[in-house]
Each structure stands twice: as C-alpha cells, then as structure tokens.
Amino acid sequence: MLPGARLAGWDGVSGVDVNGNFEGGIRFYIDRSVVLGEANLNFYLPRSSLVRIKLVDILGRTVSTVLERNFSKGNHSYAWQAIGIKSGIYLLLLTHPSGQISEKIIILGD
Image 1 (cartoon, rainbow, N blue to C red):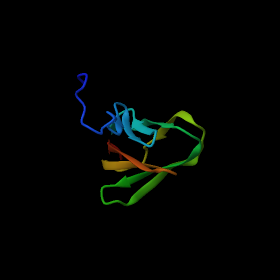
Image 2: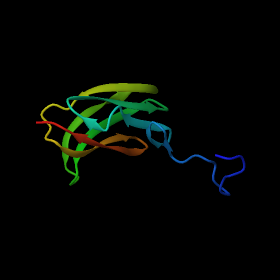
Image 3: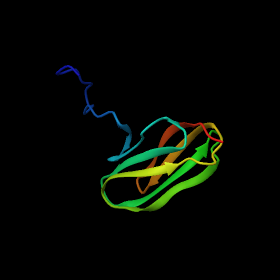
Image 4: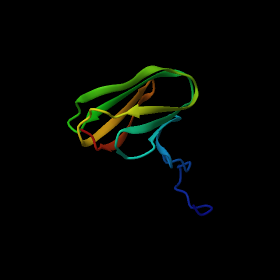
C-alpha cells in the first residue's frame, strides 16, 4: 500500500491474512484446497480454547466432526485423513469461543 493511501477510519487490517481466514486473532488455513487422502489443518489461537472442526457439505449438513479438543495458545497443525469421504465440495468449519471460521475444500475421494 502506498504511504497515505488509506481510507479514513480504516486501520489497514482487512480481517483476512495471506495464510487464510482471520477472526479475532484466530487464523485457520489448509495446506491445499484440493484434498486427496490427507491434508494439514493449520490454525493459530491467541489464547487457549476449545476448538471444534467439522466437515460440512454444500447443503450445510455435517458430514463428520474432524477434531474437537482443547488447545493451548499458539500455532497448531492437525494431519487430517480424508478417507471414506465422497468426492465433492465441502467446508471445514472451525468453531471457537469467539465464533466460526470456514475454509472451502474440494475432496477427491471414494
């Protein structure tokens, strides 16, 4: 951004960082958008909290709960096995005390 090229009242923070979704200090991104077998789900927590990640189809139905447990503050990576999931377009929803973040993925599966 050019110096001084900022909208009045805007602090320059877009809400989304270059690595993925960003909300309230929490970041969530997947190492690839097309998944065949395994993908790393990466997230950053500004404080310790319960994290739930669900796989949801395009109709909003929960296909599976991928992960649900407490995590400490900091960066985390979870190796997710997308085995037995039908090919299609899905959302991974990360739910935490501050809200919910989603990442779209395409699964090439069974």
